[in-house]
Length: 322
Image 1 (cartoon, rainbow, N blue to C red):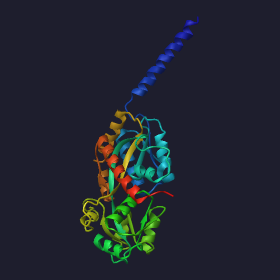
Image 2 (image 1 turned 135 degrees about the vertical axis):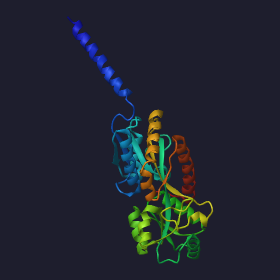
Image 3 (image 1 turned 135 degrees about the horizontal axis):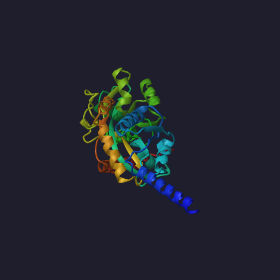
Image 4 (image 1 turned 120 degrees about the vertical axis):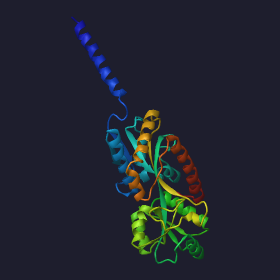
């Protein structure tokens, strides 16, 4: 009499195992994916992240949900991903500040290399060198001349410590042998307000932020930091046309936790590259961004090279978050 309940229990266990095995065997992604952006909504990072999430949702048939987790110069959201299961259902979409923040802070609860898996480099953002329109500066040559003639009196804003704009500002200062003040701001909006108002002389930030002010004549963009002239600013020269070899970008990428399975990483990388070949490429180009499709290995090499360069600038400039 006791054999029937035992047999039923065995059959139930076998059925459960079969269902579980079937679920595990489902190709990735089998359920919604959370994409954490460690900054508030709005801005280029959030805009690009949402465009990418929409395309990934359309392509895979599963929802990629944006989850904004601001705070700690991006470290709070990043730490959430570092501590998440390495199954591909919690990802990080971030800017290059992600790799430089630990270099400028006393401590962070993770390591960029040891706690994350690079998945895909999505886009690079050339920066614009903008100045107050009342200054007698029309290009990099006149900027250098003015800066050298007024040592310690010019001022450049930075939107956040250790950002691409900050590092580019430090690099230009050294390359042009200038001595100007670097003034930290809490975000780009107040920096642009003070630049237009004349409280600050210059500001280097992704092109998208300055474009409307330049076109309306509220400030003057005198150069861009990309290797070639920007399509949306064809009449504006590059810094490299005056300072050979000068090139700098902010960039955006997708990461997973450490030890993300190779097949999941490869699938995500392939889907990102597929998305960059859709109408998303036109939207990104309209925002002044350069598409960067490539393999996981390409992104890993790029990240290592960029971190090495950034560390050198940060060390030599003694850049620290107070």
